[in-house]
Length: 115
Image (cartoon, rainbow, N blue to C red):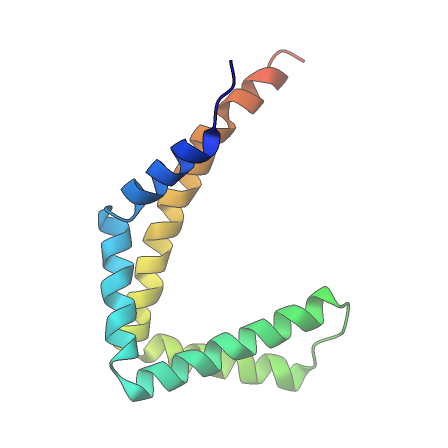
């Protein structure tokens, strides 16, 4: 029996978009986008994170100055109520995604039980 798992995944995506967690992050993102200052601060924070992550992945050392700047940028971003709300909503969504992943991995985990 052949199963097209992609049909199921597409249905899951549709359900995912209807969750409270998705609605919360969707609203929070809209609020950040509607505030020029919050949006600019978040973009700066995200760009800095990406730059540091790329350096790390390339095996480059991150300087103390870069780390200090990253910490200050993160503190500024988290001090903004709209960005903080968005980050909290993202954490809620991540929890839902982790739960879905746990359920999906059950068959694989059961294969290893008793080894």
